[in-house]
Image 1 (spheres, rainbow, N blue to C red):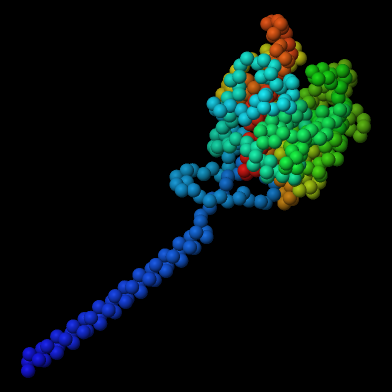
Image 2 (tube, rainbow, N blue to C red):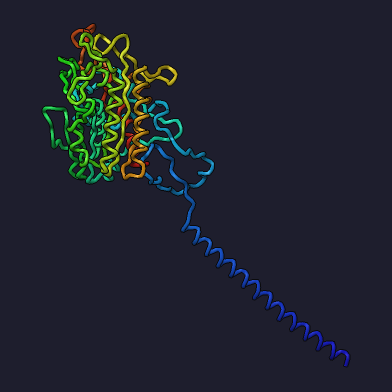
Length: 432
């Protein structure tokens, strides 16, 4: 009897244990399933909101648009991110790959800038690229540029340096498609090209002062009379067309150093370098500021939804004398930053540009206009080796090794350093 009771107790305990174990297993499975469900939910949620960082500004922009976010790549948190990269500060570094185009692949290079065809013996100037100090500057992507500029129009407004830049850009783009010249002005060196596959137009408008002016110069820069410059009137050659352009690059500078008679209300009020004429000498800085102020005011008040880049003044590299009395530029490598500084007048011009740009940025705040500061002054200052020099002429020393020829130490060989200006434009307008 005792044994029977003992067996019954053991059986009951065994059943209790089995039931308890079953409950534990069910509870554990429930916990596991809940954990998997939570993990799956969290994983799906994470895919939808991957963390982002803002791309750094590369220029000053009028308006309230923020830069587009980009996805964080693996291990990028170890890389310090700059809030802003100044594309104008950096160094020229070796570039073994050389230029994008050559004088053989591009057939629209102006004779005076075609240094290779003209027999320049040293070609080391072709193997450098601009490297900003705090970021990478990608090389200009012609195919991407043309695709994004489909049905758009650009205009470069300024002097012969603007034309130099346009020819450089045309040569770079010609690696994708050659442009058709669709307009030429015989009176002024103004042209317009079209890229038929993209319906993209590129114009250069001759307006060296941005103001109304009468000039009397030949192709070598020799003047037969004083320039007549109206300080209170913009040049209609560009203002009448401004509304038709999606992108505009304006610039000025060097022409304001020339001898000129100044007008206001069609009356002579002063001059720049006019000895013996009994007129008040204003100096070039006053005229340059007046020109920029009026140009910026016109652009800001036009209510035209465009992107406007203001390109800064270009330094020259004449040594031993001026451009018209034997100055030369024989250097074959770039300067280091500590080896050269801007001339006093270039510093004044650059300061005026900064001041008037900042005023325009304030005036344009809240408008659809985007105003960008394309600062090429410093990077150009470091390239004394990139000018045609005597090779603005075809084989200048072929007949006489000691021939005296006029040097060009202001414009740039094509291909050459000026090609990097378009790298900046691409970064500021397209990538930025």
